Image (cartoon, rainbow, N blue to C red; front, side):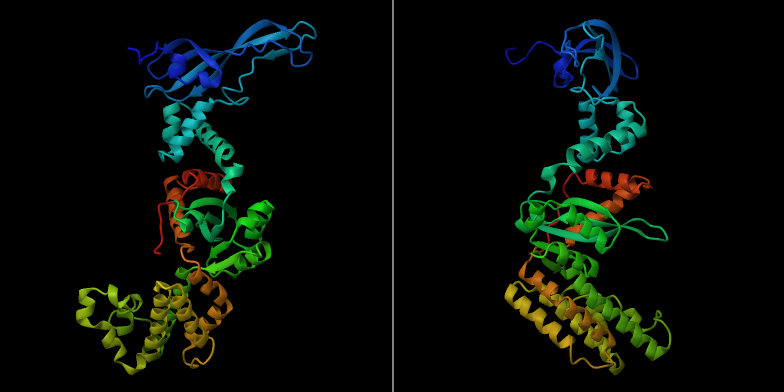
Length: 434
């Protein structure tokens, strides 16, 4: 019995952390109601520093963390004092237990935050466990999360690699979008998952530039790499606000540019040969997915049917074959384990595309112009591996799930705050290929 202490409901309910102690309890079928009082006397006048006398008491009700799966409401007795000198009346200070006019104790705020961030509970479930309304629980979650996580000064410290991408938060005719900013430093260093830093309304140069300008100078100087898609506005904002940082165009978007060129070429050749869009019996339409698949990933059925050999055996499909060759070379250059060799392969691919392409290959000409403009960004990734935007896309998927599971959001501010809380300051365990 030496390892046990005398039963203490105050310590068990963690009210000693709130500057209160339990005087009694009332158990009802639907809730528990401990009677408490503030332990700090607080009998000195705040105006004249005279000692006051007790005038009366009032009871403050605070929703507390559930005890034994039973909603708990603290009935806190608060003394009111009257100054013997000036007659000023004041109440005992209860800020240790809760903020002024708050309906939940600080332990309850921490409990709902942990339930949302760690337990991934719905707000409705948290509100039910605490016997409060959905709005009260949601307001408490947003306020506590903004105070403890979103507005924390240390949250933006040590950020050396950031990823930027767009995200559609509400599918409307206007296509409401936000700019998602991710901390990729743990991925590059191999110390953990990525973190969602912020979500900025809008998808433009101004939106990203304003966010960068609002960061302290010391934080901006720490940023070494900015990984992004081929969106010119993000590139311009990075150049103006972070002149010392290196812009990196991630391989996902580079390969996607080549894949889009392949699709456009296939559709153009299909239209020129047959005068209509692809149909079930057309070779080009039937091989539209196989064209994007590498030889090492082809299924046994695709190998047996030799679909690509039959497709490229037709002289009229030579343009599609040439465009697919560029697509496969682009993938191979980014998969090269030797950095120097991969950078050389990428450079050898971009230079011929920017000049000397036959006029008939209009898709490759357009691809060459695009790659020439962002050649420095494309080659920068080869020299800086593990700085891709794959984790950013993974977090975008989690944000899509949040939007659907929460039955939709109409208020962008609430959606941003809930998104930052749902990720808990970190993203999925996504580690790209070295």
